[in-house]
Length: 85
Image 1 (cartoon, rainbow, N blue to C red):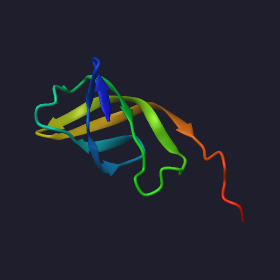
Image 2 (image 1 turned 30 degrees about the vertical axis):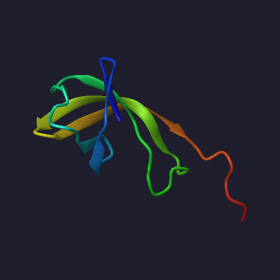
Image 3 (image 1 turned 180 degrees about the horizontal axis):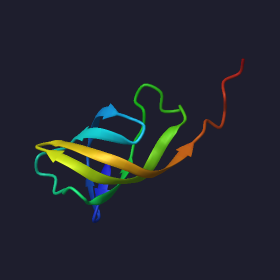
Image 4 (image 1 turned 90 degrees about the horizontal axis):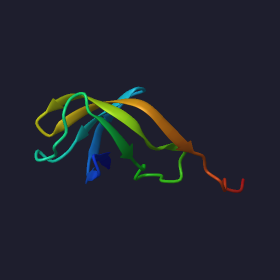
């Protein structure tokens, strides 16, 4: 989920790297290269895994419905109740 100017835009990750992500959004999403956005995410396979839950990113590429974002900042939430061993 991306947020820009009060609007929420659904997005799916196509590729994740150490400093950015390639996302797919609807063609009608009004997002431009250079724009700063906030994002929220969760891992579908393991939502309890420690991973950035939200952050700030800058759009660095737009090609149709694909967006490249550079991750600038994020927060991490660690698992609070680890499984018993």
